[in-house]
Amino acid sequence: MGFGDLKSAAGLRVLNDFLADKSYIEGYVPSQADIAVFEAIATPPPADLCHALRWYNHIKSYEKQKASLPGVKKALGKYGPADVEDTTGAATDSKDDDDIDLFGSDDEEESEEAKKLREERLAQYESKKSKKPAVVAKSSILLDVKPWDDETDMAKLEECVRSIQADGLVWGSSKLVPVGYGIKKLQIQCVVEDDKVGTDMLEERITAFEDYVQSMDVAAFNKI
Image (cartoon, helix red, strand yellow):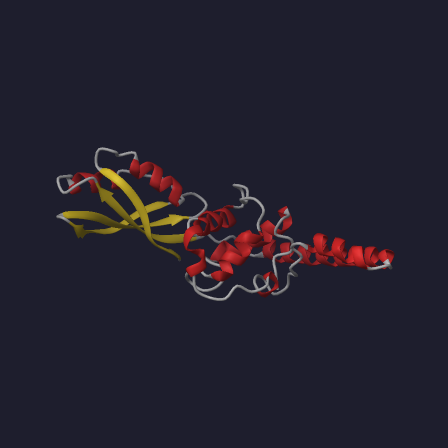
């Protein structure tokens, strides 16, 4: 199991494909599995790897709470597609071996063989994924939209939120939830196509109604 080399473009593509129909590395909530993979990535995935980038930004938001997330962090080789081998950090490990092994030439030969095998496996994996029919990845998102105070016109606030239209965005049910001191927040559901609409875009568009909206939070995020 693994994602190949997560510090390489090929490894990030494997991660992106793996997350095409998943919200998290394991299960349905953020866990130490997500933290283990997140910390192995050197830089944020590029924009064209939308599933990996969406997951990366979501897990990054848990940076302060990462120690309290459930589960036990395991080696990277315990996560990911079954037919891909983890090689993140393999180059560093090979260098360390050369420092203590007198037979450096053998190590070089083994390294080349391992590299060739890894490339063949990645090519096979990419070939399998390319043959699968395209699936439109969708997510159900529950948003908490908070007003400035108890005098904010909540009907107008909701009207502003629902006025946001975009390809791949469908608004659902909503309700007002008390938060204290007579203030109520708007809790509203929406369904988005992951390739077209993200939480960052929603937050930017919603908080632009600054006369009514103080802040927006993601209360729940689930793949459909």
